[in-house]
Structure formats: C-alpha cells, structure tokens
Amino acid sequence: MDIRLACREDLPVINEIYNQAVSQRFCTAHLSPVGLKKREAWFATHDPDRFPVFVVVKSERVSGWVSLGPYRSGRQALAHVAEVSYYVDEQEQGKGMGSMLLEYAITVSPQFGFSVLIAILLSRNPASIALLEKFGFSQWGSMPGIASIENQLADHLYYGLKL
Image (cartoon, rainbow, N blue to C red; front, side, top):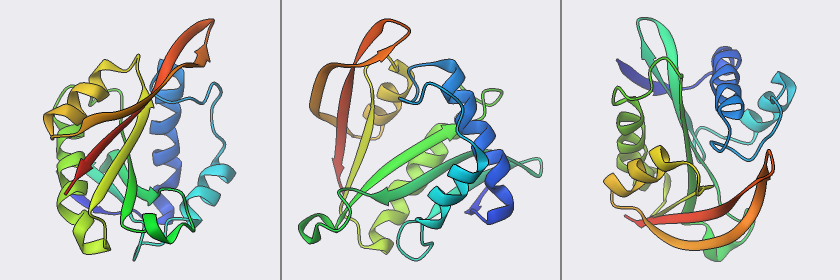
C-alpha cells in the first residue's frame, strides 16, 4: 500500500468511497449521495500546498482517502487548525487502512503549518471515535442530538488533537 497526493483522476473513486459512507448512515451528515460535480468543487478548495487530499492505493486502486481542510476559513487566529476527514472503501474497513491514513495526516500536518487537528463526526460512529482516540484525539465538544437520520438523533462531536 502506498499513500500519495490525490489527483483529479482520483475523484470518481474518492466520491464513490464517500457515498458508501453516506449509505452506511451515521458516518457523515449527508443523507443522499454527493454528485461528482460537488466533489470536483470540494477538491478545487483543497490546494495541495495548503489543504491536501491524500489517497491510499492498494493493488493499483484507491481504497481510502484523508483530507486536511480549513477550519473556520478566513479566520486568521485559526489558521493553524485543520479539519481532518477520512474515509475507507467498505471492502477495506477493519484492516488498518484508517489507522494508516490518520497516522499519515498527523505526521504531515506540521509541514502544512498545522499544530491542531479537529475531527467533526457523529456520536453514532463508534469505529471513527475509537480510531481518533487510538491516536490521542479527545472529545472537545458536543452538540447534543442535532443530527437526525432516519428519525434517530445523534450528537455532533468535535474531537481535537494538539500536535
């Protein structure tokens, strides 16, 4: 397996993996699949010199990705903070790929000027909570019961790590 900077050609698979998370429920707050045009717009906001997206490649196929994105964009006092997001192909989950991606993001974040990482997720995502805690993230905040998915409420959690 290899981790590399994502390129435009990776977007269909990146989007496919994200939409798997949408269908799994409680892995994202989206309730319907995200179209490729929206994914292209999202990718355009991820300048590889500041807010990179990385993919993990297994057997010549993108099998997961991690991104560093702006947290409260335009607020200079928070320029050293990045929001980290990660998704793994459902066929590769539970095999250590999420750990590999998150560890990589933590390792390279200082090179992009980040000293704090924030992960925003739903309380009904125990696998992601366990992964974050494995790497030293802790819960810094909670917005109780604000996400509603199929008539079930979930907290919106903020996890953080000071590098």
